[in-house]
Image 1 (tube, rainbow, N blue to C red):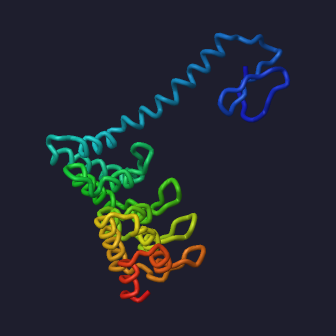
Image 2 (image 1 turned 90 degrees about the vertical axis):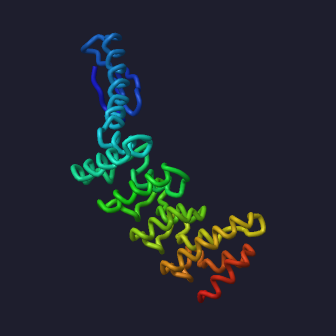
Image 3 (image 1 turned 45 degrees about the vertical axis):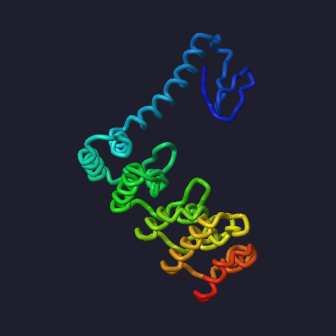
Length: 239
């Protein structure tokens, strides 16, 4: 019994995942050994995933975020873990980079939002990349600008995020995305939220006339969609 990748044996083979198990004429095929090998592979991979989830540092972070007692002690444990292992800022929780995982909850009401912002601040202070991109190639600032999530945007900008970072697909900046709201279909509170996001970006030196891959500027977006307040604001700011 032998194992190789991508090559099919002429003497007979069975495919498992991306691999082929080859049955040669020299040795008689042993079904029990085959089943044992497959079962072993099925056990090893989940065990590795479980081991990562059981990382003491990750457990300490989750205990701090979700715990309801001894907050000071749990926060101290997170700080200690970051001191011992600076690379912890590159770790993942729930299949997302830990910084993105934390920033996602900034602005959420209650302890979850408050502790998530504190965790994100600890990570940023230890070198977490505030200009990182998500799985779709979207800078975090752009990701939150799409929905005018002001609190995560403000956190990222305060910690040095590039206000003019562009998405991968259309080369749109955060300012492009917040001007894509259609005021005709939006509630008044949503309009105000998006206008505040525009002001936040402009206050942080966003390029007001930045062009995307099609040459479209934020003012083009706002005017085309009939966003009167945004259009007036952009013009007043020099667009």
